[in-house]
Image 1 (cartoon, rainbow, N blue to C red):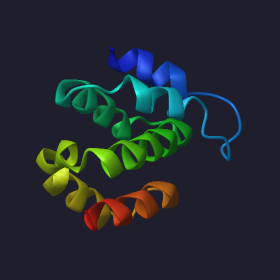
Image 2: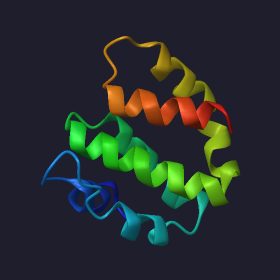
Image 3: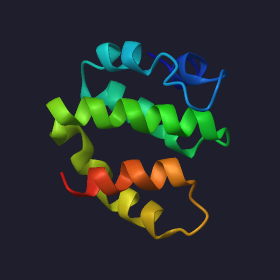
Length: 97
C-alpha cells in the first residue's frame, strides 16, 4: 500500500478517534509495508501521526522486529521537545520493545 493511501485512511475526523488504524494493522504483511507506514509519523497533521503511531504500536506487539531498523529514529524523535504528546506517549511504549 502506498504512503498516500495510509495517510488517507488515518486522516480527518475527531482527534480522539483511531480512524481506520485497525484496518491498516491488517494491511501490514511485510517489512516494506511497515516502512511505508512508518513514514507517516512525519506527517504535518497531528491526527495522521497519532493514528499511525497507534497502528504501529498494535503491529509491533505481534511483529516487534519490524521496529528494529527504526529504533534510532524513534529515539531521536523522542528527544525533540516539539513532538506532539500523542506521539511521545506511543514512542515511550516503543522504546520498551
